Image 1 (cartoon, helix red, strand yellow):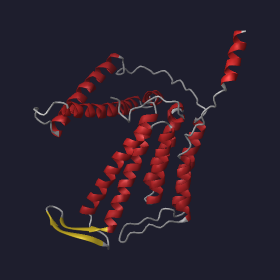
Image 2 (cartoon, one colour; image 1 turned 120 degrees about the horizontal axis):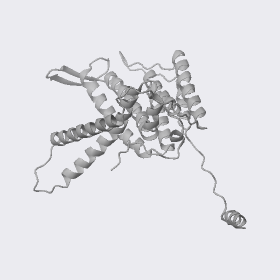
Image 3 (cartoon, one colour; image 1 turned 90 degrees about the horizontal axis):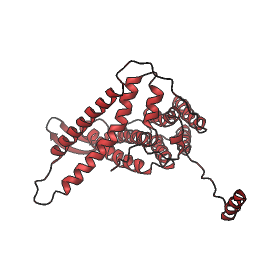
Image 4 (spheres, one colour; image 1 turned 30 degrees about the horizontal axis):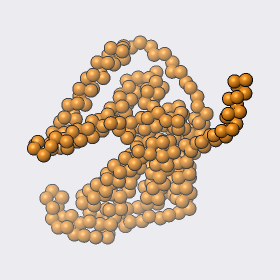
Length: 306
């Protein structure tokens, strides 16, 4: 069973571009997500990252990231509402709780938690598109002359995380198929088995890397760079998003404030940066080549045979 977040070769722009261009394009969405707290801008960033993933063929990865991101966002919102009692608008007084003390749920705490959760969900979507569309082997090849150990570690992580997710799914299916007479397998047992399998895989990977000479300090050959005609488009879009976001931020586009009262102003600059980011989500769009008519194809084949 293949994980939805695992890299899959596809004929998309993000897959054909060099890793630097793809990382710059997707990384610009992450930069905007951490620069802004406006829900409108964050929603535009999340929609742009999702659109880019769908256009690149990573629809399954986007769907999984949205599901996990929304779950995490709801959890962050609930936790922030319980542990933070700042704000003027009290929605509920839940009395005394152990450790937490007096718990008062305020609209401002809910709003601040929702923004933090939305930011986490947006970043998860962008990272999911990166994991599914950017070849980790090419990333390792590009970074090895500059930071070989760090590049190898990051590449192994991007490979192992989808494998661990697939192992977890297989373990749950196997536990469900044991039959009604078998003792139920709890989450603790599944977690221990997953950890043991991950450690075994890590030992095997370390032995393989040692046999291939990754522990030696031999000089690495310079990477062979294969340019793509889509690189400029991705570089330009990433630079445009970051530059426009910084300029709009300086112009006061992000006026969100949670405390002491919830304020979500929507200015012209906020709308402009939101529309720009959303439009840049369509950069990976690739027009499909038109198919030649059947008669023309038959004529060409006859001429070729003659």
